[in-house]
Image (tube, rainbow over the protein chains, first blue to last red):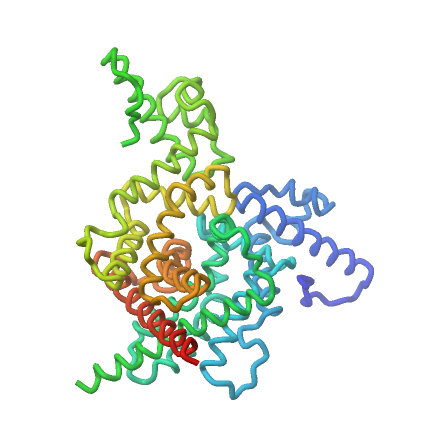
Length: 229
Length: 229
């Protein structure tokens, strides 16, 4: 998945070894960065886990910063590919359906147990001690996702809504999803019986969509009444 | 504020020195734990910053775990005392007013710049790597706060609402507030012009209250209609 398609394959066997080492480094780095964070992670530990020479990070990525950025962007893309924001909706889906799909896909990404689950841990660390890699992640992934959501919310609010209202409502939607990621240790202690299996994730998606749609429609009504005054 | 009231003051001058050292340790520990987290923090570093003997943590708190728990509970209490959940409302305030006060006080705690702001950083670290101290914090602070919110939401939803709906709606409220804490690094990059000064914090509180009230009232209507079927 992380294997680069940029190199020209003139020497198949060397190329395979080259790509395999790169792939092992990315996987080992993902583990180590998720466990101890960017700053505490050492190139030595990553190379050891990858079964690679200590110079391998330097050779394949240049430095720890670039390796980390590749891990962060890669884990985000894997997660996005597995649960795309439209969840396979038809192109003519309504704004309500698109909001539901957006919320569902985001929740599924958050509750994922696959290797893409690592992305959540990396992001939680970024929220405490942001690195330079966050800027490019926002540019390439977070801002485009935010634009999708704001587009849906804008359509639901109607032509009378100002951009500030769109932003506040969009933020209210996304916050309800992210809570289940950020506050998991509190939730699991407050409500130890909750399992967060497939039916429950779908139930959460239904609740968040319904709650948000009711609030957005009421906001639209209020804005429309204000405009008529 | 952290000074213990448990000791009997027979020797005023020694007592003052005793309490001062304890207080310096708590302050230094708060800084160090917030900066590097519970696991990476060392007793040596904390004692050095507090200008105390290396044995002082052991003498005053027993071990690093107990010192950490005292810091976490203390920072939470300071924050709660400064911005109580009812924000000084009259006892006969309506559920709508109490929801607004709950949201406002929580947002003010989150955007606080005082020493109580440290609590947010400690909590963010707890959400990545929970320690034993989280259990007592939940018991003593988070669960009681959650009960206040759920009581307000239950009153707003009316007698027809089941506990699951109360919990889902309460979670939707609190998540909208906590988002501004957990996702600050993303927000500050997506919207660099936002200042989060007093008028903006009040504006956020108004939006979150309005958004939540509209959704809760619509949920109450739907539940009431269901019950009539």
